[in-house]
Length: 180
Image 1 (tube, helix red, strand yellow):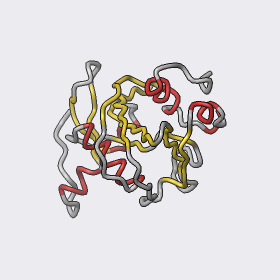
Image 2 (cartoon, helix red, strand yellow; image 1 turned 45 degrees about the horizontal axis):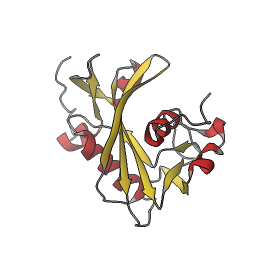
Image 3 (cartoon, rainbow, N blue to C red; image 1 turned 90 degrees about the horizontal axis):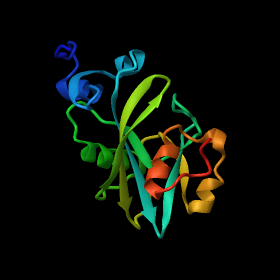
Image 4 (cartoon, rainbow, N blue to C red; image 1 turned 60 degrees about the vertical axis):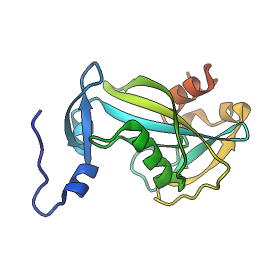
């Protein structure tokens, strides 16, 4: 892949925010392309998800009705794309700040591949713990709730983000009733 340059009138920072690293089969970065190309060509890339804990429960967010992908679906506490050149821990902390208004440390739980529709993503799953209040600042989140295992199992299966179930299984250490 070739090195991309920002188009005229677009600064390096704004250009880099839209670039995502492409991975090879061994999860090495082999180039960077705009987000639209990642999905248009189904290129493998990195995603982060964060599970926020408080008093033995996990925060599950409900995506805004205004987002283009899976509006109103339940998802991990925070998550999103890793930007070109961005370390996964930095991306996890950025997503927590953008989506929940939290600036707290994160701890890597596990990394795994997720494939859907012939499109592979390398997911880095993180844990964060805090007693701070969440604030939905970026418009991507409508709300959410702290759930115990029984409440997680009771979430409507037809409203679960496809990446939520494998993240919960790895996070909780055992399969959830919500899959299948």
